[in-house]
Image (cartoon, rainbow, N blue to C red; front, side, top):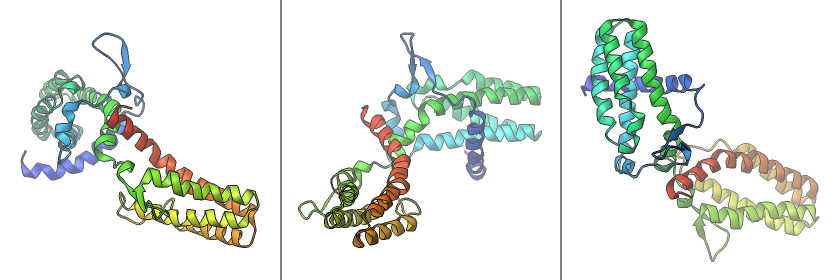
Length: 294
């Protein structure tokens, strides 16, 4: 591809993403496809093809190819809408060639490529009929959407999302100073959090304070571990509003206001723990399924 086309293509890909999202919003449902035996199967239930791995070894080559195709197709669309048939044809010639090359990259996904539909776009461009050309481009867009709906989230999960099982966290246990994120949360952070609430409700101030101190230390360790994935300041879940509630709970425990301390801990649970789980846990569960098949 000519170098002068790279910048506009990377800009156009931002537009094509929004366009596909808008155009596919009414059809973004679970895609069903017939397998070789006839009965329908849910696309989400199928594992990703092993042949895709070769395109995600060092760089997400397949993703780059999608960016390139999306930008080129948008070039055809934009130029057609603006009546610039000459540049629409140039973009189309490159798109058509790269589309056919891309269709051979992952043999199992050849069903998502419609070369005949792409050829029809070229035929429509030759007629000079703007409406006919736009309608033919819509058919190709819809084919792209069918693949995105069925496969893209699984691809993001497997190749782009970090794995919480690989994240390490410090602990309050000298015999186990560091362990995996999941084990540290289950064995130490959650025990401190729930222990604080249980002891507070039982009116056991000393025990509540002991549990809270464990939770407080583990919460800091969790905050530190967030930077295993994030490289900017965390503005949610471990942010200043949560830390203010932590300080409030600690003061309430020290002043024997255990009922309110329990209520404050529940607030922390809702605005920090629960919302963090809602954001991160579905991604991790999906990654586990896509990566291990379970």
